[in-house]
Length: 430
Image (spheres, rainbow, N blue to C red):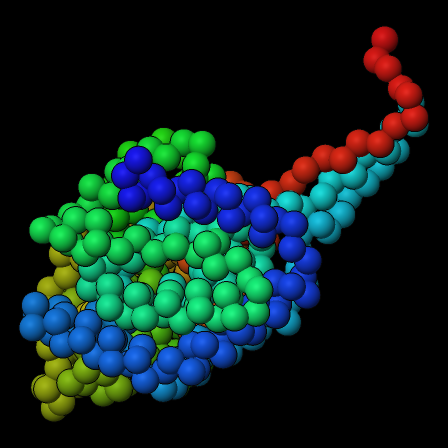
């Protein structure tokens, strides 16, 4: 039995025990895990610093280094996320529905843990804690397969989590990290372990890919186990002439600049032709020196007037730009003639993640909400709010862009399924 197979066995055995734990026991164990992260803060930050240094030496762009980086504020946020999960109602055992059949049978639909989950993700060590906490509270064990770029950080975080669980009688074996260096010391960047995870029928009940297009494509196309697909975020903002343009500029800046390397950052700006002349000069001034604009002919002409006075990188947009998740300080800009055209563009190039309209036209709002095919649709707000912690989940497994089982930010409910409990008094079927 190889080491990864041993982990599969251990996770399945741990999950069987965890499924019997009540909410109080799970909450006590998670509180201890959060305390252990706080206790080991210095060790975690030192490990993360090594990852960040290695990433920069390897030429990782700064927007992605930001996703990898931890500091005291982010660790505080991680701990707060665990505490919110603790405060949430335990979904396990909840009776979702119940009814009596004409023959007297009582049918109850009850929430139960999904089982053993695996998550394959890139950078972002906060994901390690988010997913471990959600899985544990939902009665699931979890296999964490992070990227080699975050290995030191993930080791430190998982070590803290497991020590905290052990300290308060928790089930530490319910959380496992795929240690790439230990599995394949000669080639720690190898992805052979991914293939083994994706083929683990009977051991892993669900796998979640969380990262870029290539990672997600590989998991979806090769998995022999169920997949909850979390999509890349080619997100759009569409601006109409009736929008408050001062607000629009700030919303666009927030959606692009706050954290450009995350999946809910805006990548393409669609502007109604009648709003181009009024919007673009103010937007160029706001983004000058911070964002490269890749514009179509009309938006470039409107932007160029202000760009002559303020140094701004303006480039001609290409077809490829409309379908690209830049994860960088780059914004594609396209002029459209109607709300209908904006919707058609988004539904063609979007990734069904998060889309926004800025307008005061209620008819456009209604149409945009009804016709956009995405997990989250915003009106007069930044796309950056698509996040499990912002939605009140404390943490998230990712943003599901598929339509089966769950969609959008995934919290505790995403790791449950249903069981039918049927009670009778001697009924037989004739």
